[in-house]
Image (tube, rainbow, N blue to C red; front, side, top):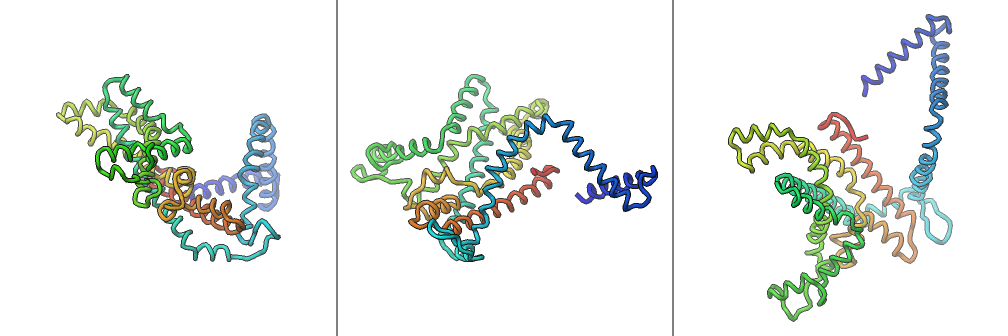
Length: 344
C-alpha cells in the first residue's frame, strides 16, 4: 500500500514539474494549483464523456443510498432511551453498559459464534466429501441425478424446511422419527416421544443436520468446479505409479481443493454474525439457552416486549455490526496472506 502511494506522489511531482517547465506556473505552489484544476477538469470531462453509463447507474445509486445508507442515520439512537411513547432521551453509553451486563446478551453472542462457525465447518467438510464422491462417479446419468437431488433443498425456504422437520420430529402420532423409535422399542411405545426441537440436548445436533441437508448440495458447486480444472495428467501419472483410487483422492484431489477450501472458509467467516432465519424458524423459548443468537435476541427485544426500548436494540445491532466489520477486516487480511489479494 505504501509503495502505491509513493508511486502516485512521484507521478504528481513529475506532472507539477512539467507545468513549471512549460511556463504555465512560476512557482511550485502555483503549479500545484494548476495541477489540481486540471485534475478536476479531467474528472468532470470523464463524467461528461461517459454520461450515459452514469445515468444508467443513477437509479441503482439512489436505491443503495435510500435502503442501505439512509437507515444508518438511526445508529444515533443507540445512545438514546427511545421508547414508543415519549421523546428520545440521551443516555450516552447506558445502553451498552446494560448490554454488557445482561446474561441473555452474552448467551446469544456465544451461541452466534458457536452455531455459525461450527455450521460453516460442518457444511464445508460435507460439501467437499460430496463433491469428491460425485467426481469419482463414472455413470454420468447417475451423477447428474444425484447432483439435482442434492441441490434441491437449497431452493426451499427456511419456513418450508422448518415445517417439514417439525412434522417429522414431532412427539405426536404424526412424528415419523418418534414412530420409528417406538417401533424399534428404542423409546417407550406407550410414551409421548421425544420433542427434539424443544430439548436442549437435541436442538443443536438437529440444527446442524438440517443445515447440512439444506446447504451441502449448493456448497458442492464451487468444489466441483475446482475439481473439473485439475489436470488429467496428474491422475495419469498417479496410475503409472500404481496409486489406488483412495491414494489418488488423497494425494491429487484433496491438495487441489485445499486452496478453494481455505478461500470458502475465509469468505464465509465474515458472515458468521448474520445468522437469523435458520434459527428463528426452528427455536422456541424452551431452548433459548442453546439456540438464541444476536439477531433473534434483537428481534425479541424489539417485537416481543410490551414497551420495547429501540435504543437498546439499536445498541445491540451496532455492536453486532462492529464485530461483523472486524471479521471482514480479519478475513481480508487472511485473504491477502493466503491468496495474495484481499476480498475488499
